[in-house]
Length: 148
Length: 290
Image 1 (cartoon, rainbow over the protein chains, first blue to last red):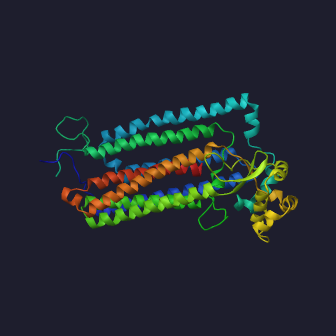
Image 2: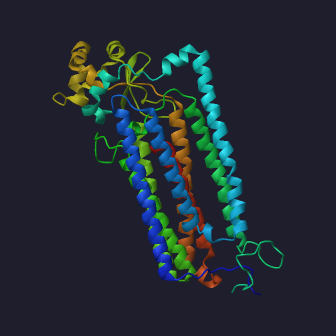
Image 3: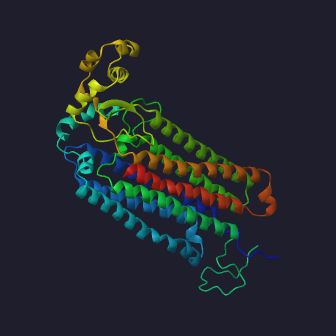
């Protein structure tokens, strides 16, 4: 009985090897860039007056780089890119729900925080980051960091 | 072997052939992975919601700064980058195993699958060390008006904001003899811990430089539950992936796939293994980078 599906997708060995090598290097390079950004964020936090906008921008950049990594893993390593378009769509289209999912829940968390800060002075007082003591505390931060 | 009529450009399915040109099990693996994506997504989004509802959240670079054998050295992100690279490399060896399966090269399948299993075990060992270090670590934290040495558990979080000097001064007098002795011992090894415990409290307190102590308040409790819950769930996936890979290795050794005429099972196990790597990309992002 003839088989219904193609079990073997014949790719030339050389082509396959260069594709895998390229993807591996790409994933490693992206990871290294992510780590560098992580350390940059760490150093911004340690500084005298951390710029929150700058931190947010770096965090956004890391998110985009992670999505790029996910794309390469799925399309090259998992070969989703080689499947029939309609099949790809049955996987990718449901994932679009995440756009709503992430937005809605993060906005919800944020709104809960704002409500508590407005109506619960104790919560605000006890959890709001203090900026004023940073000059005295942070000066001692450097040599003792390892003791945390 | 294959139906030559299946073209990749087919727009509408007209029957008589596999619409996606995919074997049933492989297609179902894809749908399982999609549903698992939603499970992980729900966990991570719940974590995000809680994080956005807090005024303060610990800086991951402060929490994850230890490296095996490096003692108290401050090495933010170092160990987790090792873990990340282990997973990336094991993903690459899995790609090579799947490719060897396409070529029906049993020896290469066994070789690359074995390396993938080694990578999986290496990752799990790293995670075990990291958890152990976080749970058993003793971090001085200001809890209920006294200094306590606590680890990162699901009930306690020692990574709050830096405590104010005046609060620390008061707390030192309320703290136990043992905690004070340990704090002194951390900075000064001239006396043994037993000797220090026998020293009067006032002397211990005066031996401490408050500005140098670097004591933090309690942090958000939810941190531990989410961290252990989500990395644990991911670790469980890695573990089951390793088990599946071992089963595949044994089956390949016993010529099961050779007799079947194809190594499609390796491909399905490969999909699962890559998924584990994929999830780590986001766990890494959410817990260690941002």
